[in-house]
Image (cartoon, rainbow, N blue to C red; front, side, top):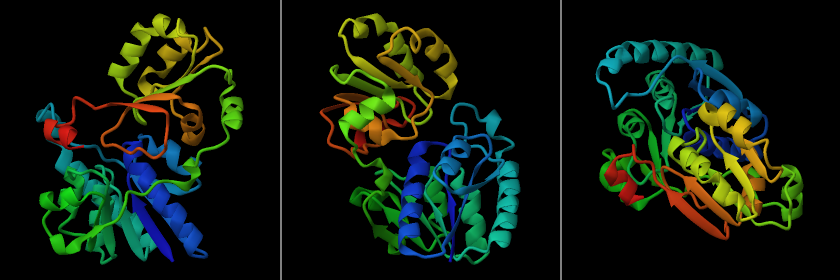
Length: 294
């Protein structure tokens, strides 16, 4: 059996696909799995590190701020669909699974046009543009929230299944987690992350209040994303052994295991673990209705 996954852009779209692929590997012997994602995006790092083959195509998302920047988007999408068809014909999957994000659009659309059974999985209460567009072409639409039903057509395709979570995120021993990060286990730990890409608003706030945080005598695990990593790591990651600044944390289970307080930026709530405290920060660029709904 061969299964194609299409996802990318953010960890929020990639990790559900990884979770599903992991379970398929457990259930099906000799299964072949291939991922398609966007060239130059974070999936080029995450997918291979999780043990899966990745093919990439040139595709970008819709720019909501500038209509002019979207002029060439239809042509790029057509080229991406053509490239995906070539990959699909070579791989010959038995099924295709998309987990949202613009990177899933050309691959799942191409699969459906080639007669490959396809589904789209969405974790948001308010489905994104990719899910709405692909709903017409896929065989099934997997949703996490009952509220999502009101925002999608083709209701006969809807299947309600809880959002997939990777089993590799199981909580570990706190002692083992402290050793992994090289932190003082006698101190409380603040874990801060702004999603897989980082969040400039969070990073600027923490940087501006760094001295105050250090006065609290705590450990700080800080995932800052690719854009701000070099600057913030050089400025803060080398001044205190109890401060760990990362571009991206692959083994999040360790961070969850020792975070007494976590401040996180998520597009939707994915409270996968019973931590001591959460501070949820919503992205201002997400539409107001989606933010309030989540």
